Image 1 (cartoon, one colour):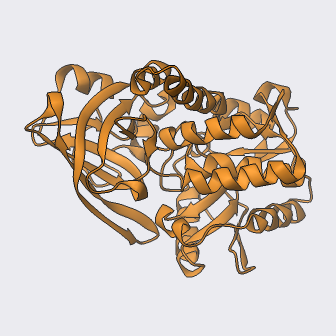
Image 2: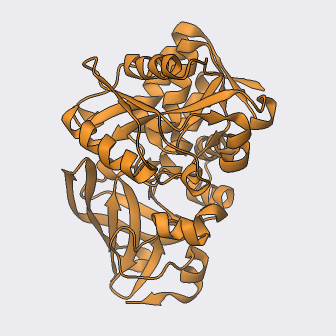
Image 3: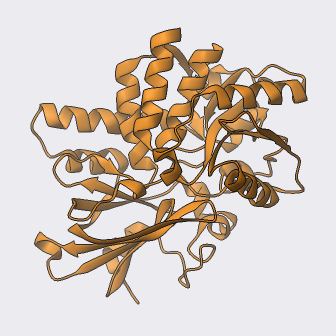
Length: 364
């Protein structure tokens, strides 16, 4: 158990943006929400999952929708409180603590903003170890934990209670409702016991986010290469160095979808890289080979500062380094690859781990 204050939030926000693989919502907005809540209500208790009683009711707090929408429609925080209160009323039980549903952007910050206001702890676990665009794309789904009953809430005061036959239907119905509710909503779903979280969740993910953010901050202070420090921290690989020469991005069906094209610099001069995304980066490929594919993580970093760049933050002319990071082993199972592998997103390629692609390359 330890307390999370402002400096920890600053570091966590940077690490969340990196592990969010371009998605998970604007980390800056989430950071501001968490900082404001801590300023008003005090520091938040962060618990290791093993510190939580097995029978305690725990619920992740999250935002659903296209990250681009948050640039114009930032949440107030009341939506998440309303969703949690209604879920407690429906279940007839108090929620012991919350945690991020994914390691990404705003969705890693929202639990701290909510926990500060409700006076409950945050638990160091999540359901992805990165960010993915759809509700069923969590380790809880792999282990048969239901997303419903689920509450979604918008900024206008609307809420919806969902009870579905499976988690794929939760995604389909909630996504349709989200579009009608303005493109983004706050969610309270995947309620479970702490025992289930310990078995199914990815633990120590917030600790890793904080280590990433801290490594970037200290690299600047000590005048060392931040990208080298990041790669050491996450056991990652540098895939491509270049500048953005084209960005095709649109909000469609409740997602931010598109392709970013990079012109190679230095060792990658003469090559172009295409980065395909649906909220999160999914495929990184040159004309000759695939460099990294989902469910492994693809992150875009500013070549000077090492700071992560989200899909909505990619701009023409930006000089970047694209890195790949091995995903959690749960995603490399047969069900994991079927749920979040390249075939699911419509790419006709067999999943190959990033470490294998880096060593050999995959010809198109």
